[in-house]
Length: 556
Image (cartoon, rainbow, N blue to C red; front, top):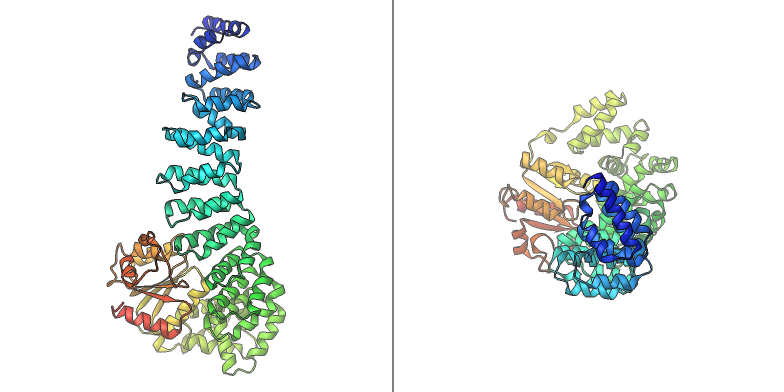
């Protein structure tokens, strides 16, 4: 339009408004998209000053026409929003009509949290043939956030349509009531496509109940759910600690182990007394004791540090290693004095304690004691004769950097020729650093050459570059769990070419391609997944050696 015609256009609009001539006003605004943005703004200004009964139907018509300027369309919506406030019956009527602007009024009902619109939104959700309209209805019910919305939305949690299911998850997350949380947690099924959305939704709610539900999922039979729950609780951080502490009282040892993993990752000091109490109760399961000391090592609480030395006498080696690393991370003058007292005799017990700290790569302890009394001799003997090469190299670098070349040269000169023989290569993957240190030690003692990885993705890259003789992998790991890792390895190597041993605390688990069965995986199913053998924690050195020997002999 020319400038003159646009001026006439505005005059005509003003005249129609003054005459309450809605029909003619609608006839005029059909040319709304053709005028320039300045004129469009002027029209909206005049409508904003007019009575609601005039402005609303004209704005409704403009919803169909739309401007080619987004900010103009946003102004149209804002004006409708202003008029709609306090007029829920009017909005319900417009929602009920099937017309081009229906989606707009559904959105308005959500933005204004119109509880009065819940019945008509529920009806539209159940009867509309438009997927777009149904999605918007779900979002609005979620935005309204009333308890009455839960039943209408939750039915779609079991829909075969992933889009509707995800929209329902998001809506229930916004509602966030106890019944919404129950519906969400009950919909977790092992379907990785939507379970992640549900777990993230529960994490976003961050209520006591939602965090309790996430804690319950730590013992899910689905490995993917366990891993995602661990990640979500860790991301929530200190706010989840009270629920996690409560979860430590569970009778399920797997629940305790995974809870300790999360508490360690969070590192909040308020959890330390509860973990210490758990150790005072002397749990029978060594996995629980290991998890407790590992968590205390990550939390770094000087108030509980003195009790860590008890772990050095644990009958299980993995627990002793975790306790040693925890001491290293919480080292105090009092603890140092206690350690000196334990090793000053230089006897077999002292040698074992020094070996534990070296295998745990307790660098602070090593550097604190390296010049003290019998420690240099005990440490040198162990590093030369028994420590795995990676650990020995680690300490040789520390000694060289500290200018202690004489001690480093003595260790190098005394290295056993047996340590230099060619060994079968075994790759171990676990997200626990302490478990990796244990594998390094044990595999070396068994006569193998270990390479260890905390990140499954990094391990996969190295395995694809150079095939080891065997892979040991944990089941529960973030980003890529043991079953997913196995699937990726099997793209290149068969079970005969590269045996895989799966290590887990779970006596029964479901994951990967078998998620639909919900049953414990038997030997046949294990082989279908590509795993040669499963070894359950806690296991003995004899168990590990036998499993490796059988797998390498292709008997797995």
